[in-house]
Length: 212
Image 1: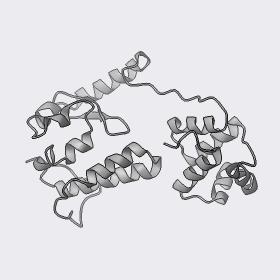
Image 2: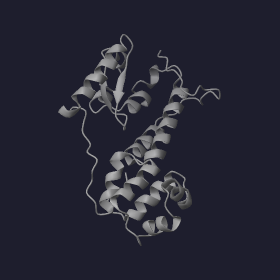
Image 3: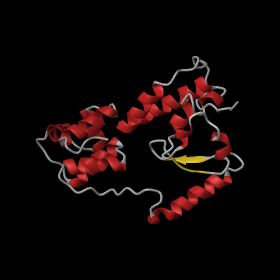
Image 4: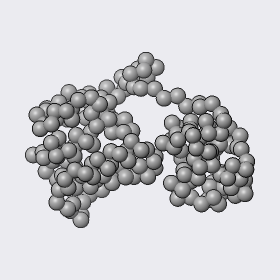
């Protein structure tokens, strides 16, 4: 997540480059002149709140990451963020629990954007019990760490090389979109784990994960 201490132009330029867009590309998407966009990025022009949010929308900036843009431009943040146990999200929590319960007798879980376990159905417990490193199950539980750690579920996964490649690829895509430093640190940690044999060249796009 970009730092709020940086100039607005740096924020916008970073998001634009992350989306592999030129100034002209973004200007056309936002229906503004390239000159005006250049002035905003260089700090020679200050966009209105509506213009800034419009640019963020065209760039696909996640809502939580639009607040730093607003702050950098001198505006108040407008996007609130709540945890799932917030009373206002009780209907959402009930819906998640209903979906998880409907998957039984098969295990199902819900995660947040950092792959932290938020909720799970009762069928998950037998699947993860008895791992070699119990601390991996201490909250907050990161499901990628739990899945790929050599003392977690990794020894139980029959096609670990394919499953690992799939998860690493998904995480890299997520980092490319979000630039989230928490995910970058997680990726670095996961890549430090001992790698299994090379993945099958004909690996399916979304492999199943059979357990031993």
